[in-house]
Length: 146
Length: 155
Image (tube, rainbow over all chains, first blue to last red):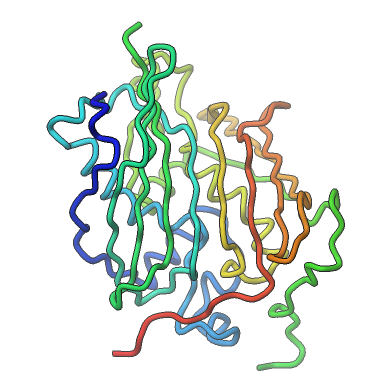
């Protein structure tokens, strides 16, 4: 992997409109049973404008930024050798249906360890006003030649 | 709001003690669960639904998406909180794959225990196991007492 990736920032992704049915579909897929992830009235009763996305929903928006990284011509990342090492989401506020979100990826670090490479990618996700919603951080391990 | 629905009451975080178990749940994953997650998340890596592809890259067979394991593991905490908006930070390390047998599926158990109580709220530590071994490391959920509810500006 190209060590010069470290510190590189990518162009913001096209806005992603969070749909209510997409949130419900995702909620069911992660076995969410909480009413505020499924029922708009339950969500409004606790002060949200619509249903709230489960904590890991941000991965759907983050995914397009990781695709940018893997497609970067000089990155030298072989997709077939990539293993997901760890994942983190740090929220300023939860994602709610109706949000229009944009993600900007920054490569926080590139490291080599025993033939493997590790890249830590931070995607900062903001709403249509530019206010921070969540940062999604992935460490991808790229296995070396065996 | 209907006074007979206590769903919206959230736990008193200051009353927690380190080591308290706040939630436990068992999840039965099947191949159907993986296909459903693939569609919902957009992660269509075939190692999550095709044994032949999984085996061609040296795996025993189809594996659950790591992000599916991460996504379901926090749900017992969300149900305990009654509000997923109270999760301020959530991190995991993927330490062991979860093979999902075509006939038998896979059973995951989640135990959520208080790791830290402080001014910010609490840190809940998850133990997520499959077949007697943990599959996630450093699985930590930061929960806060009050959510920031500002959301979509009205158009």
